[in-house]
Length: 106
Image 1: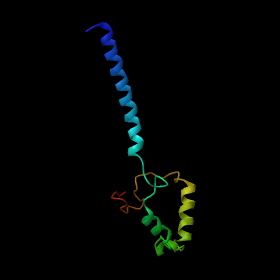
Image 2: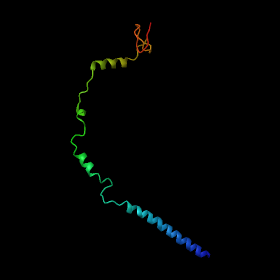
Image 3: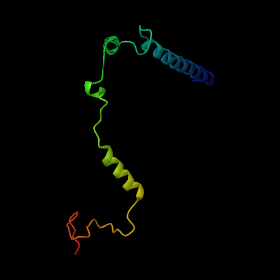
Image 4: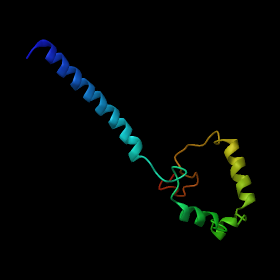
C-alpha cells in the first residue's frame, strides 16, 4: 500500500469513529424519551391516596395530657442544681450501714 492510501484509510476510520460517537450520544435522548409531563409522573394513585387521607396521625398523638409529678421534678431540679454534697463519697453506700447498690458501710 502506498502512503496516501494509508492516510485515506486512517481518515475514513476516524470519520466513522466520530460518527459512531455522535450517534451513541444521540441514542441516549431517544431511549430517555417518556410521554409524561414531569419526571416524577406515574404515581397518581399514591398521590390521590395521600391527598384524601383525612388524618394520618394515630388518635393517641392528639393527647396533650402528659402525666408527671411537678413536686418531685422540682425537688430533683433543686438537687441537681445544688451539685454533689461537699462531704459525700461517690461509692453509693449509705452512712447508716444500709446496703445501697450492693455495698455496705460499717
